[in-house]
Length: 496
Image (tube, rainbow, N blue to C red; front, side, top):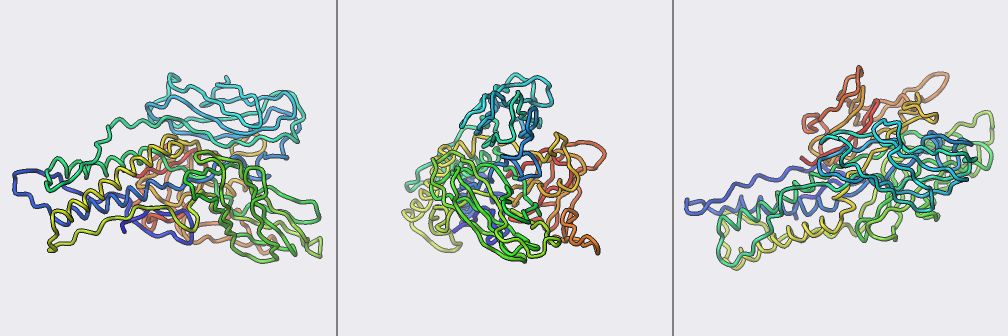
């Protein structure tokens, strides 16, 4: 039934070919044979682009528990940073959009600073639902430039009990100058014009999807949970989840290690309501896998958060230690029914004669698959017409690093792309088995964990931007999960 894109779910990741199969240019009146191999390549390409059009989207990161400022744990007075990250500007982009929700404590505002400027590009009045559009055309950004976005709360108010959640930050539109070639109709004649048009339609769709970057989210690796006496409800992650297709769910997948408590629980909130509870679970290490149905409006994002609570602490107070949570996946993905991938026509087999009517039927079916894929892309601009910003890890007091905490929120990918663009300093790719060293006196040193395989990307002497062709890294096949280690400002994958 053709090839499918990698699904960001560790139970079903398998290698696949990302690139389209080569198809020759067809010519009339030169004795060129219409071979089964060429038609089979067109069929496979149609299946590839159909599958890739159901891109599964990571959740958007607003904050990472108590390791950075988050809801209910802000300082008592502004100014302070609530979001910092980067997007990649491409020619044709005109607008930066910021969406979020806030319950201010007083008359504070949210200032937006771009690319390190000390002058705010916009001032947001925080409300329960806000959207701020900022014109970025004419600001002098060049194609491919990676631009900083920083949001600060300013004003005079006692903000410890205020709440600010950023749902989305993206630049748009994504320009693609090449015109859609359309698809032909076959009825007994197989001219080079029609065959090339069919093949070019698949290539156009692939190239159009390749123009939209695949961005990571921050993986919560060994984030601190709670311990001790009640109350101790602890936020692990805040952000948003999108619903792009009718059967999308929110998928949370990870691992927890409960060190000393008798019982703990995990809670998932969607759009302000408790949506799922896991536990109680006792001491030990176990898997987290939580699917949550999404019912909000198609094409929009809503607030999502993950919390942990100690229900029954350990009996010996002196032995209490914080649990650890690795929240690997926070994605929108299909429910158990899967996405409605196209039913492909029968394959083309060599040395098998078929009638003109059968050939017409199969080629027209492929044209329908390609045309439907084009319609799907047009109908999901929230996926294909937005280049999303990537949140950068930062410390509580405005610094860009915070010691050991940096290892708890690194950019995470399940490889889908052909190449990686990354900006930062001292950056490497880590994948494979994870090892946690142990100290005889202090026990497991979670924040010093290492990966089975690492590949250096950017040296540590200065900030740089590099392009990495992922096929060049041995073992990093499509579907492999990996993290970026070091001082990473921005990263994206591209299909080509």
